[in-house]
Length: 347
Ligand SMILES: [Zn+2]
Image 1 (cartoon, rainbow, N blue to C red):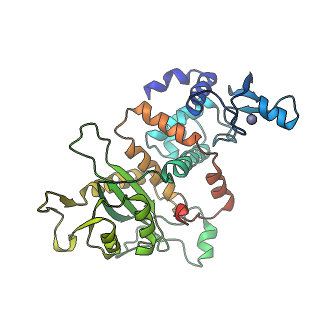
Image 2 (cartoon, protein in one colour; image 1 turned 90 degrees about the vertical axis):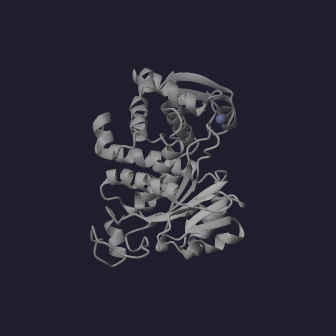
Image 3 (cartoon, protein in one colour; image 1 turned 30 degrees about the vertical axis):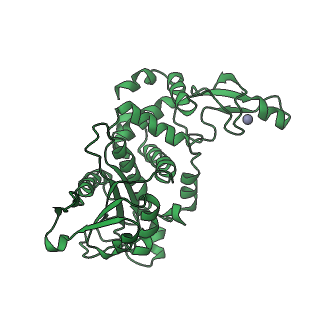
């Protein structure tokens, strides 16, 4: 986090740094996009005010003001720019709300809201980005994460059942309804022949269930046709034979990796490694709610995919993603007080 030190001196420096990441080519009006803007005096918390000449003319007013945070995720936040820079740095260290609250000296409830905003911003921009596709050699696998209706008494009531019993060992293919939502993992293996290739790129989607009808649209959207596609023997993946070079390992028969005659290594070990990393990460949240599971998962996805970059570049990539949304997703999610459809993008 050392590179943040110059921006942690005061709110103005922090606001200037964040503004530079939001508008690297100069400030434009968040309402009309015009670059005919003039700087005005700063707000008390160090944010810069601007006047948009174009908007003012349209509205027939002398001024049409906006600030560094207008129409961004941070717009309604009471945290100061300096605190946000610190919180984003701690968020990137994969800390939970309790640890962020202690380290940044803010209320735990505030820290909780901050990580939901940041994770939600990454979900809405990075995760749902339709241009992000996996290719070449792709492994698919699923895992099951215990997550209940924590903090949602109404949800428990609606289903007319007792709260989820903790630590219950369920066998077989679990579903979200059973309190163990499946997570579908797709990973593009790192190209070992290219020393400059980025880390293995992963795509993680929290699901209601693992039926073919649920996973098929996701795989078709996220994996480029013609890719080599590696899975276990589970029959939900059989539809992929038409579009992909589909090869399976038979875990049931004790086969975990093999080399095909054409030299291709058939296994799902990259994905297995990612699962253990993800479980480790999710354990920090000590009983995770289904409502927030996809937000935590997407933070892991983002940080894993940027893991090969220097810390500063990852920080700045995250901030740019977060500034590219207005935070509507998160506002809808909190105002509706119910779980959003998990596969939002495919409906
Ligand atoms: Zn404007």
